[in-house]
Structure formats: C-alpha cells, structure tokens
Length: 399
Image (cartoon, rainbow, N blue to C red; front, side, top):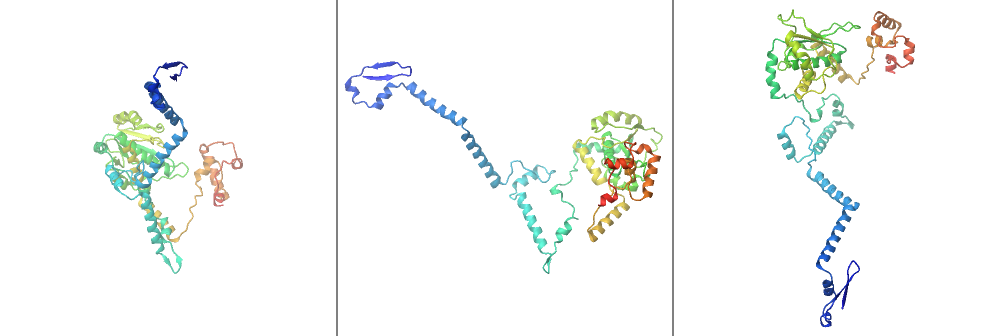
C-alpha cells in the first residue's frame, strides 16, 4: 500500500498488488504519485524565482555594467575611432569626414610627432654647450594656427544669388553715425554693413561722431583703408562715399534709437518700408543694437567685415609694424596701459595726480561740461577716492 500526501494535507490511497510493488523502484513509484502537471509547474516556478532573484540582485547589474564598460574600453583603445567623431576642420564636408575615418593615425599621435619634430629642431640649435632655443624665442611672434580651424566664408547659393540684386540696387541708401571709442566704433561699423545687407540697401561710408572731450575730427578714411573696405565687400554690400545726386536733396528718415539685440525680422519690419518710401535711412547709436544670434550667412558677413574688410590706413599700419618690429628685435618690452585718457578723469570726477597743471585742466573741463559727470556730483575728489570710485592713476598702476 503506497500513500501520497498532497499540498492540502489530504490522503489518497492506491491499491497495488504486492507482486508489482517489489520490482518497482522508489523513483518510479514517486513518478507515479506526482502528476505531470504539478511537476512541470514546480520546475517553471523555480526558474522564475531564480530569474527574479537575479533581476533584483545588485551583483547582476554590477556585472552587466562591467561587461559593457570592458567592451567600451576595448573600442576606444584598439579602434582609435571615438564615439562622437570630432573634426579639427569645422568647415569640412562629408568627404573630409570619410577621409578622416579612413586614417589610422590619431590626433594624439600626430601631436606627439609634431612635438618630437620641434624638440629635434630645438636640439639642433645647441652650440658650444649652451642651449639656444630659437623656436621657443620666436614662438611668441608666430601667427597662431587656430588649432586647425580655418575661416568659414563660403556663403550659400541663395546668398550669392540675392547678392546680385543687392549690389545693383540704386534706390535705397543707409547712413549711420557711430560713436564711442575705437572699439565701439568698429563694432558699430560691422553691424551697419550687416543691417545694410538685411535691408538690401547701399551703405554710405559711416560717419565717425566727434568726441565731445577730445574733439577728434578724424573721418573713416583717416583711420581705415577705405578702398580696401569697398573692394572686399563689393560682392556683398555696395559701399558709396556719399549720396548720389538723385538723393542729395532727400531728407533722410532718422532713427535715433534702435532696440537692443534686434533680429533681422524686426529690422525688416521696422525699416524696410520707410527706406523704400524715402530712399534714405539714417541710424544712430548702433552699439549692441544688432542681435548676436544671426543666420549663418549674416554671421559670416559680420566676420568678413571685422577681420577682412576693416584694415587700418597705410600710415597707421606702417607705424604699428614699426613698433612691433622694434619690440621683436630689441625686446623684451612691457606693455602698460596707464588709462590716462582725459575723458576718463572728466567723467569720473577724479584727478590724475600727475601735476597741478593737469589737475587744473581736468577741473576746467569738468566745470565747462558738468553734464559729462556720470554720477554723484555732490562728492569731492577726496570723498570719491576714499569711496573707491576713482580709477588708479599712473603712479598706482606703475607700482
């Protein structure tokens, strides 16, 4: 007689003759007592429990991350192909990228070879036991290579197509008055060219506003190379020295204040109808008026004006080259900006402290133009000095 206990604590009896029980083994008897359905269910339950245990185990996840990390390191060290390819030349096309991927030499290896070549070249300059590093001495005067970058002035086909109509137009003219110091005037000239391109108008040579303190009456051609400026931009914007006879008597539409960081869309909606109707538009105070986030072609034009078209006039360029050559041949030199501009001391209400003569000159200028004083006109020079509102004078800077 064999007895089998179920999970519900119930007993079932099977009547088997003793002649059959003796030759049957215990394993065979157990297989008879357990139904196939329950046995398979028990096996599947064990597999799911083991899988659930691995899924929740932190060791399993640590092992998985280690495997992926190992294959990632193998890819980096043996394939020499980074996960995110980076080109040293941002202006390259798809063909350049394919050539770069075909190369088996990495940028790190190239830089190492270049350094070795430089070291070998510097070792050749050793004479009489004294190391004379010519490369190191001349490194300061070399033009930077830009880490492999080059100018991106290839304009789109649409830009080149519209350039023909912009250059041929003889009905719209833009006049601008730029103010401030040299750097501010230069930035405003750059933006003026871009605005003229946006409006499809010719640009009259910018007018440099006379500084109320210095009284400098220099014109554009006195500082910049005007003919070079016109030639470089001849395919982008037409530059004229003055208004033509057909527009001389036209009263320009004057806009004294343009909104800060204006977009090309805003400029067209604001000025295009006016300049088409009147023919001449006059803009003032362009400092930081044009948006810094421009479409690609307009941003390239901005760079073209700043770094190609605007070049100092020959006399200034000659003087600068002479000073640079003197510093290179007879150096070392220390460049020290003493900030001794007269307008700085007039506007701040402070004194340069050089001599009594210069202090009286600043005081007289401030008395004649009290509106130039920026703030806190009720404070004396000594009160401003103690409050930290005065710039360093020449003696303090030199110290």
